[in-house]
Image (cartoon, each protein chain N blue to C red):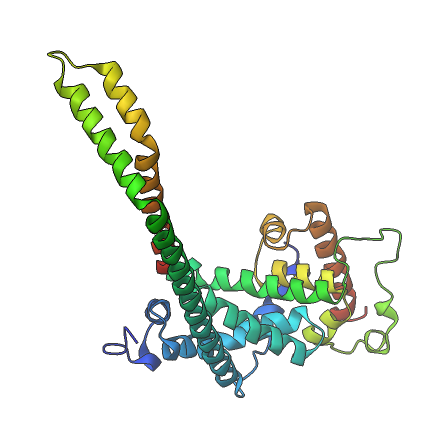
Length: 185
Length: 127
């Protein structure tokens, strides 16, 4: 409750909310969650195939963030720090589900989605539906690369995957999305 | 970056973000539960530390009861020897002083160990 005296939560900056949350102010952290929940849930929804699972993971990630706030070096680092927690939470959940992130079968065709009725008809497929057609690993790497703007090496550092694996997932995932999203010519 | 990559980045940037349909309230409840669990853990830890401290004190009390007089006598003797070593010669009797310190070293180390152990326990309770 350290900052309650001077902090109007709705008007406070994110940095002020984080500083108050560091002093274990649950209301300030609640305001931070309100502001960041859209971004966090959208990120996890892109990585998961299920909205319900993504929201559960987002909730788990926020609670972990509350427990580990002392590890946050500066308020400005919050987005990247929280993204890492969200990705780690996602990876742990997928590992429990025995999802495979490392194996790449380069001999397999990139995609057969171009023959889907939507693509054949040149219909517009929204991003979320297109992402759902990718593998877990491709979705993760494409979302972090194109959606969050992380470099391949940053994805390697965050996920623990090999650089070649990340590059392949991004390339193949992007190629699949191109076939799904670009209108048939 | 080609046109499609730019389109993809724009699609990600413009993608719909879910509304807060009770999500932040659920997180708030989760945080409150986490805090409550932390308090229970801390209380359990404090009770455990108190029990351990009481056990150590009880053991130390037993030891002092059994060997206290002997320890005090040894310590007194060593102090007397050290004093004698320092005062018996016009020049410092280094050999005698070292012997005295060596003989009293176990008591010194015991005290240092107790102080260090206490400091470690204190730091842990503060963490």
